[in-house]
Amino acid sequence: MSLATRPSPSRGLPPGTLWPGVCAAAVAVAGALLVNRYVPALSPAVVAVVAGAVLAGLAGVPERLRPGLAFVSRRVLRVAVALLGLQIAVPDLLALGWPTLAVVAVATGLTFAVTPAIGRRLGLSPGTSLLVATGVSICGAAAIAAMRESTDLADEDDAAAALGVVVLYGTAALALVPLVGSLAGLSPAQLGVWTGAAVHEVAQVAAIGAASGVLAAAVTVKLGRVVLLAPIVALTAHRGRERGAKPPILPLFVAAFLAMVVLRAAGWVPAAVTGAAPAVTNVLMAAALFGLGTGIDVRRLARGGRVVLLGGIATTIIAATSLAGVVLLV
Image (cartoon, rainbow, N blue to C red; front, side):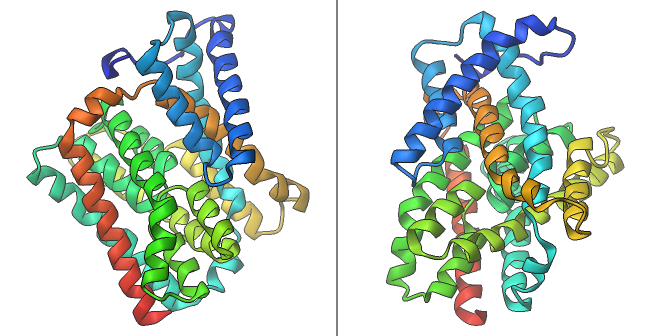
């Protein structure tokens, strides 16, 4: 399936038309969870998005599945982004200390700021460059979805291209980050900070952290980057309004993400809910990424060397900047 024929939004369709696509996503999630059980390094989200791309590339997506896949790739993804807020414990972030927080802020901010300019030099569209910058610098697919809803610069093709790049380099990081960390002589504490500050998806950070014995530190640092999602999206939307665009300053689901952070910080969320939130979020995110994966044209992405190059440059910037910060400050 080409990017031009990806599932269309499901708004206004009878609910019954959603079930075939939703059920297909559920089957894909079940398969992704099974693969993850036996190969923990492969997160359900990564397996699901690859499964979606394989389905689109080999068999094509039947028409009856498209409304449901559109539903999970937009509505379900928004719920998953909002629930990410329940995983963020503000005291844990503050306990990281100013050196670690400085590494996160500088690496994320620099990558987000310079990647669109590099994309323009490569001849890419502003939307593609912006979404690659967002996905690499903050938190992968969730950040791409949030930014896509907050600007009129990017369309579905831009989102699919950015998602493919994030999955590509985030998956490569599963092997490269531990290897480079070992060659650089990083201590376990330094490796945990670097993993959280440099790797794209929360699930990928967790996989590296679990395999390297630095799970708690790596995920906490990564969630520090996730917190930056709301201000960066709001700032970008505000700048778009200054140019005459009319996207919302803060999409409702990003506001819900912030609300979840505040509710947990205030102690108003039961421990049972915060304990279950990561598993629920992972399932919803995998379903959404399967839907998004059906919009990735692997052959077109392979021919689109410039977007792959931009993703590689952005990944190198955040990895090198955060590594330098870790060596100097942590």
